[in-house]
Structures are given as structure tokens and as C-alpha cells.
Image (cartoon, rainbow, N blue to C red; front, side, top):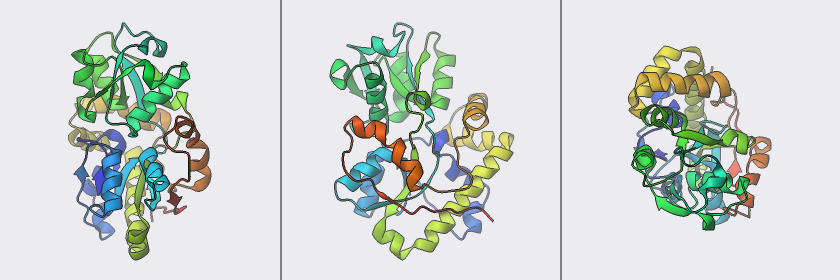
Length: 289
């Protein structure tokens, strides 16, 4: 399966927990993960047959469907946004991004879509800023050395850069900018699902068990996620409190459903990422035994 960042983020760490705790093995599955540049790359791998399962934010999955790729969402890793726009002190608010250099992975990928939503919230467009291509794991360094003046960061990245560099601060919490946005999907091609439906159910059951474990076992989860993300345990512990303690971002009972996905797609549809049909969802509900 493919993941959408060069180094696994906290948001994608459920797969590491499911592996470490044996939930995938107990489901009869051996999963090899590949870390790719962005969700766009993951979607290309699934549509092209190089990957069986993909993990990515919803935008490139829907864009693939709009372009004729028959993608099917089977569940969610985090169904709430886990990111924020972070900037140095001289950028006091999102409105101050006009004329600035902002970091994105690639056009149409998750962080670029989030950047557009931040800009849109203050009446700006991508034409008002300069996009600078940056790999997901390099955002913090690019902010600190001044190559960019804004980046969409995962929670652990935001915690780390604010500790490292005084003056770095959050100018927009994306779960407040677009509170009904459905974020992270696990998806497959329809042809793969038709031949492997039982595998998909067992995979999502193992991931649901991982989500439940994460809520109930902070210390062990922090240790696994710190090793996976390559961040210090103190950073991950703070991110844990925000993501699981405050936001409850990891779903514990269901996969992705049509009612949940429909309103949350609205923000980036209006921003121009996709104006046609969304991918199918299985509407799966796979509670752990």
C-alpha cells in the first residue's frame, strides 16, 4: 500500500500501530507500505495497478474519479483535518500572505488544496502568492531557513517547529476553516475490490482495532508513533493530546459513508479541484471484534 508523505505522519500512523500490535497479522494480512511524495502519487499508483491499497486525503481520490479513474473509498484513517497553516512572526494573519512564498507539494495535492482554502478564507487566490515546491518532510526546515513563509503542517510538525523557532505560529487551524471536511481515505480500484472484498474488510477491521487501541493506550501509542514519524516522544505526546484527546480524529466504528463525505467535499470543490462526480464509497462499517 502507498502512503502520501515521504515519512509517515501521525495521521497515517494507524497502519504502524496495526502492524506493531499484530492486528493485521491476526487478520491474516501482511502489508508492505511505500512512502510516496503526495496523495497524487498514491492515487496514480492505485489507478495504475502498482499499489493495491492507497492512503491519501480525499482530494486526489475524487480528482482521479472525475478524470475517469474508478477509485473506491473503503474507509478512513482520520476523518477530521489534522493540519494547520503555520507562518513566521512577520506573517501575523492569513491576509499577510499576499506576495509571500508558500510551500506546497504539488498542485491538486492535499496541502496545496488546504493552502487555497486558507487564501480563499481571507479573499486571496493562488495568484496572490508564489508556490514553492517542498516535500512534506521538508516543510519545517523550509520555514526555519526562510525559503517559504507559510506551510500546511501536520500537528506534530507544527508542535516541533514552534518549539524550534520562536515566532512561528498558527495562522489558521484547518478544522476551523473547513470544519465539515472529510480528510483521510483508504481507497482501492473497483476491479481490485471486486476480487478482494474480504481482504478490504479484514484490512479495515484491523485498522479500526488500531484506532481503538490508540485511544486506550497513550504511552504505547506515543512510543510507536514517535518511532514511525521520527519525532521526539515529547512532541508526539503533545500532538496525541490534541489529535486524540481534543479532536478525536481517528474513527472507531465506521468506514467512510456517503452522508459524511458529501458536505465535507464542498470547500475544495468550490476551489476548483474537482467539479464532477466523487469516487464511490463502500459505505463500510467494520467494527472490530
